Length: 205
Image (cartoon, rainbow, N blue to C red; front, side, top):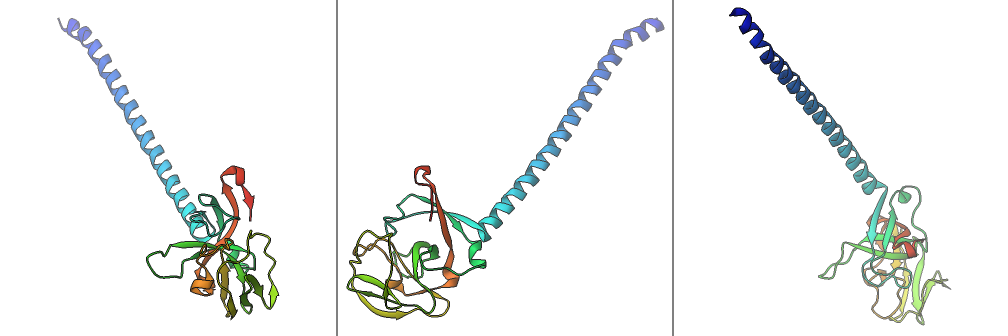
């Protein structure tokens, strides 16, 4: 009788061993999954931090809104904004820059895209509907019309300030330094380096 009980107990022990092995396997899989999840989470945090730092100090992606920079830039185009360049050189005449809107009022925007036409020490004026810098007509191959807004007398650009205008010279088409004055360097976010979207219009600026 005792022998029969021992023999009858073997299948139970085998089932118990299989159950134990299965539990260990599931536990190992669970620990492995948790470890992989932690690795992915750490990687995601690192990537997000790096991208955030790059976006804050090195580059930014901006979308053109409005028509003030036509015919150079059109609404909906995406720009690559180089921020770090300002750490090595100041904006130059002809640079297209993104700046904080210095104006006040209900139509104020967070950012503006404009072209630098006057740098510190320059004297800017519009005479007979043409831009003059330091008494000489400015070469502006990027515009498609004469300045339709009113002329203005010579304006000296102070130290650390920049005179910006939109490429669209039609009447009332651009809110720029003719409206809010020259802007300080600290308000300039970066230089528009190139159009990256749509691909059909991809081009350096």
